[in-house]
Length: 516
Image (cartoon, rainbow, N blue to C red; front, top):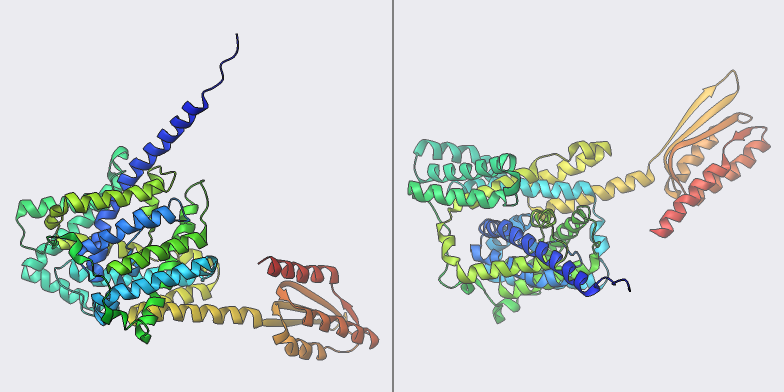
């Protein structure tokens, strides 16, 4: 009797059913996470709530299909709310679409030119400082919205005005106090759900549970507070570019705004993709493809006049934790968002605005919390200084100035590292020996300083050179030491140095530089 061969077709069908089932379930989880965040980010950005949902739809159906990071989920992000809010205040919602379209085209071109890896070459201190600064700005602005009010102005103004606004709300016991109560109730539910929910139910996101609880509480108590305003036609938020708006494309403020959105959105998306790669064992991110996909998505969002998008760590993390295996889950989450706004848009009108603001207040707190400080301190106080400086400038001025200032400090640090050279002498008069210790980087820029120190050494001395703390030496300084050794020996002196080890260190650096 012949052995029966395994049925490969049945095996393949079983495998397809397995990943299809996992990705479908993951897409539902991501949809539930995305829905309240899309609306909250929209309100924080100064646009209608449904504008964020449309961005989420594009992020799922378009970017999910083209993405270079299979498990990353794209949509409106808290990281861009501050910048978008400023742009809406300065240029109006009508021009936001033009700016986002330009930003998307910049991202697309950067991806096609293989510049994706370069967006990752930003100091971690600047990135974490940017995220923390954004967290402070979101928290300070949305705290006023959680009181059924509006942000006052710049980040520092919103931050300083919080105590007075809170005291006024508490003392008045009116609408603001009720809204504040619903907001704090939402945050409490999120925290309690995250910490104490049954394991089987933790698949449901805390933000969604918090909003549902807020809706029920507001309905039962019949609170007279602000609720989400829903247009009769969801597509009414779409604003296609007009001829007059297109004429302003080459205005300097518009171009600067587009570059700002492109840079921040790209950095956030690619850093998110890198973080998602560490969460799973599947295919790795193709950064240039991901950058181009984000560009296509933002160009479409711009043409529709809605919010820009990035890869979002909260939704992406939920996607991985829910068991997603392919990009199908991200695509399907966009489909669920589309079905929701097509069939159940009226349910949005029951959501208190303060509950959505509370979600962002909590998000801002988590972004601003300085949990990264111990890790940065491990790499030196300069990294902490760059991190804190970036936060301060962002909060006191604006997001772009803060990021540019952080990058400037990073470049200054890099210049210092490659130009700083310390030379210490330890002299033993009895033995006639001098120990010369080198620390830092011996480069062409510091060659005169090294030559000056060598000339100060007494003729006939026995010189021992120590370079354990030397980070780098270039050919010019290596050549100087070689020539000085000959001159010193001719004068009756002696130089003790591990030439092979020093030369090996030089060649190792050169090899790393060539590979990079």
